Amino acid sequence: MSKDQKTILILGGGTGGTVMAHRLSRALDHKHWRVAVLDHGADHLYQPGLLLVPFGVYTLSDITRKRRFRRGIDWIAEEAVAIEPEKNRVRLRNGGNVGYDILIIATGCETRPQETAGSLGSLWGKSIFDFYTPAGSAGLAPALADFAGGDLVVHIAEMPIKCPVAPLEFAFLTDAYLRKRGIRSKTKLTFVTPLSGAFTKPIASGMLGELMHRKDIAVVPEFNIERIDEEKKSIFSYDGTGIRFDLLVTVPPNMGSRVIEASGFGDEMHFVPTDHKTLQSKIAPNIFALGDATDLPSSKAGAVAHFQADILTRNILDFIHDRPCSAAFEGHSNCFIESGHGKGIMIDFNYRTEPLPGKFPLPLVGPFSLLKETRINHWGKLLFRHLYWNLLLKGRSIPFVKSAMSMRGKIPPRGREEWQTQH
Ligand SMILES: Cc1cc2nc3c(=O)[nH]c(=O)nc-3n(C[C@H](O)[C@H](O)[C@H](O)COP(=O)(O)OP(=O)(O)OC[C@H]3O[C@@H](n4cnc5c(N)ncnc54)[C@H](O)[C@@H]3O)c2cc1C
Image 1 (cartoon, helix red, strand yellow):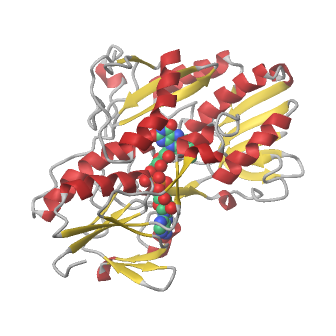
Image 2 (cartoon, helix red, strand yellow; image 1 turned 180 degrees about the vertical axis):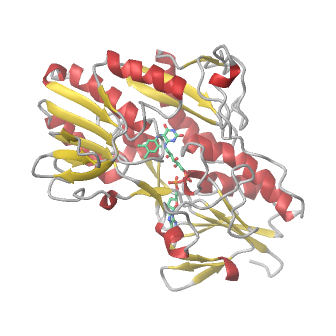
């Protein structure tokens, strides 16, 4: 590193951090700027693949690759223990420090099962599993294969969680899996959520709730978990409602990284206070954030981190050139929802516009149907893994998919107010 070089340090080399590193490395003059990524993990995990491991579609090795960056990006394989904004440096577990001129926080979020009383007892890993971690997802595969019928409960402890549709997908895929095994009629499948319905947004929630009903999956809304009772093999809510399980698949509370907690500037869930539009943090002007680590009201999803990277790259270039941040993130999110039997649903929305029915135009492979089960949506989901490794992570754009949501093909219901939410 030359002494005239300044450092952009990206803390976290997951989806958002890797995309940002590649984009900035292409956009900046290396004589003046060094791009460094700090992440202790040797491997990069394609997290959406965790959904399919319990059903035997993938193994963990199918969805894991060695962490790699293009030439010119420094990878510091260390764990950060605290950020010190007043000193413009990050403290490391090994006792050292890394200084920065600009810091991008991309530390994602992690599951905290210990936040739920009774969670990590003797049934954890035997009758209670999560599928948000490699160990949980891999452990669930034999448990599902051995399941012989009874009460199977899919449960979300608390919002927000990353990929808020993944538990729904898990319920749909479980339904299909048990039917294939001929034990669906011996199983009561229940979806338990703290939300008022199957999903956060009313139109999608209605459609997905209806699909749950058709697949005979009972939905228990507004369930705020108080504890897991191992003896009674039940989950209990604060209002005393109990739900029995033989197999519990839970999504534990998702919280920001421990480094944010230790740095003392996160919110109560350890998410980084961040401007919802510019992605500049509220901690210091030279600290930015993207992806699951932020307190943004957008979905916590890889696709969202990718859209945010577009905005953040432009705003970092503005910051470097002493201009006000000119790009605004509008909350664009889209994803495929696996619904079982080789079908899927697509949703596309932003801060103001909730998921609407219609078409998502995409030349060559599309259009994909919105809020409707189709086979092509399922193939879109499988194709996404290849786009992830080959385009998205490398900081390339996915052709025809923009960071700003388009209304092309969407069919709004009558009365604009019904589908436009204020932000
Ligand atoms: C089961 C499941 C299914 C999903 N399905 C989808 C889907 O279909 N579509 C979709 O778009 N998204 C999906 N997601 C969500 C998606 O994977 C995440 O939203 C995305 O990875 C967020 O990117 P990120 O960069 O913010 O965080 P991450 O990709 O999680 O990266 C965070 C990085 O920070 C590093 N880090 C954290 N703390 C430290 C520290 N102290 N020091 C150094 N490094 C640190 C970690 O090692 C990690 O590499 C799914 C997630 C799960 C769990």
